[in-house]
Length: 141
Image (cartoon, rainbow, N blue to C red; front, side):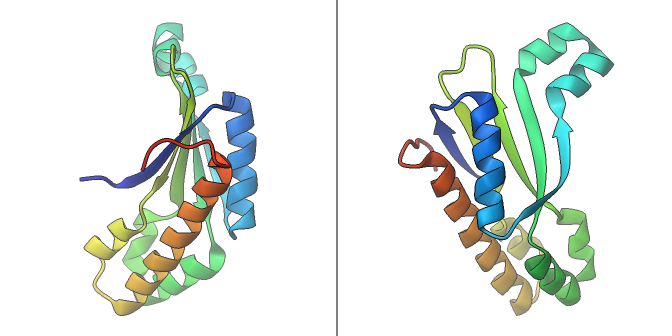
């Protein structure tokens, strides 16, 4: 079961993070949280663990309008928010991978038509953001 949309771009990790932030903003998402996995692993598990994961950040993206609609329909969906977007480049990788949660996952867990509409809208926006990031330089699904 796939629960993300994924692209791989031939950008540096730093450039991919910058482009991801810009594309998310262009499609109505703000970044509410940022987890630097590499730095966390380095601090908690040591350099070997950090180097094994490579450059890896989790951006908690949120479109306030969509989140408001989803939470009004089913308050429990807050446990699935924000929409996580990962930018990662492991040791020896040829490109940088950008993955966004597939909001249709919420539909599988939720029960209301309003949640289906919100998930479809969020899905279209996240896929458009990934297309913008790729800029014609894409591989993945």
